[in-house]
Length: 251
Image 1 (cartoon, helix red, strand yellow):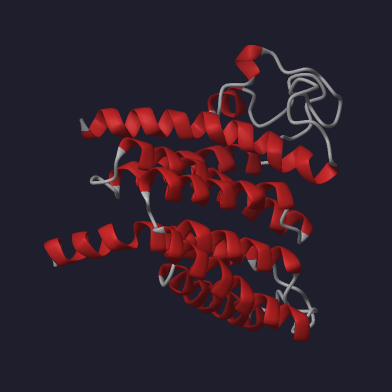
Image 2 (cartoon, helix red, strand yellow; image 1 turned 135 degrees about the vertical axis):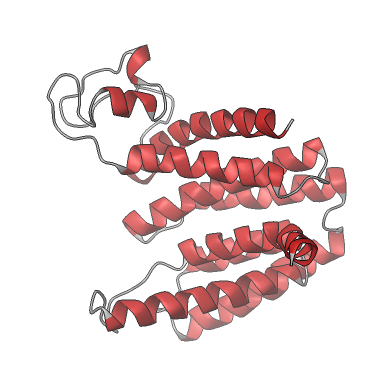
């Protein structure tokens, strides 16, 4: 059963990651994610079915377009592998979660991956993806009562309010996209879990910023996208309870 779960969720994650690559590339440019068909951004060669197999096609092509022979960015298979691994973790690290709960979490994880990559590229968190995070959380409340309505409401207003306060007085360091995402995470996680997310995200951001300064890869004046840290912290909280249980069991 373990091997089957790994294969099923891994393959599902790879396929989802392939679609997320389209979203990450096209959404910031306000292009349709449906049409035109997937193609090489350099020579516009329309990809054939065998060139669309996640990760495998990249390896078969040697990381290059079959027509113009220009390099395909490594991030394409990287996103596919990352999504595949996260899908496996979503299933294996939550063995007691219901099937519909897993579906919600898989959608949530996919949205986090897309938001992370887009924020790294553009320093923006598209409203439509943030809205989907909020909608997924709302559906989870309605169908599973996880979290309950008041917990989600307090989480959204409380966490979003804190970040709005920060962005109002320090707009250079906190954008409205971060405010909206935190409010959406408040709906998904509820109170008090969303504040664990904020704490962990801030901690990760400080660590990353400190290392970047030491390595002189960033200066104090250079902006750092906060979305990736919110996404990483969200995953830690999502999987945290089961990880703590496993740690207690084994050690």
